[in-house]
Length: 307
Image (cartoon, rainbow, N blue to C red):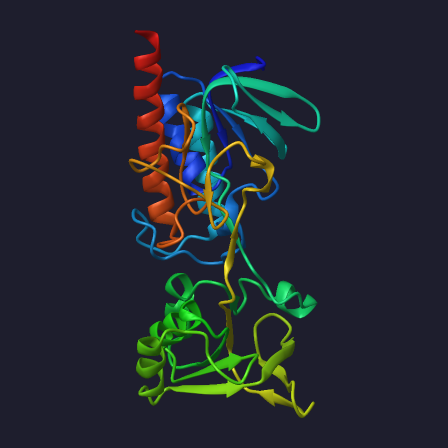
């Protein structure tokens, strides 16, 4: 592989791979750095039923393998390494991994965001098997079941309210004795008969072998422990955009990449796509859409640079 690319894509989730497909079809031979989690968050999702084009559910890993193979078919090259640093202070831009340095005329950053987890071994073991960080993605699979949501902010209340469309009961576990959510969100949740709040509560263990069979929870004031019979756990304590490797190379807003005009960043020629800048929607299909836009913007930039 050449150590120079016309366009380098950092990240290999739906945003990065869609960008690569568009770039490769334009004969730009993009280089994709697949990163620490090749395929992105979808690789931990067992069933995907809301991505257009599949009349039957497809697994997250299978969908991402298909997208990667499609990108490869059109000429995308992959570097299966983690980007450790970038330099956007001059042109060409440079991208460093542990083993090599690649220069590029344009860059698309699609490194996504990582859900914050509780840090329990049982939680990680059952991710995608009843433990989720996205009610919009997975709520459908919990029809007529009881579930729990962890968190006390707007995101947690939004998740809980959405889950009432499917679940018979939604417990909201709040670590403190009050919510951080806005008052309008609190009022909406308090008026919903399906939602029950458990204050001063923490998850000690997620129970179950191949699926969630319940939770062991603890009252952090009294120290009392008990089991809660739920079939799903939704963790809604926030997301962390994967921007550490950028250092001070780009302008950020609350650690998300700051954009102007959809995908443009603070550096001309550097674009972004997906959850690394999109704090609002956080869906595979919107990430893919941003990937398409970033690729088209990068193409336009390269054309203008030729003039």
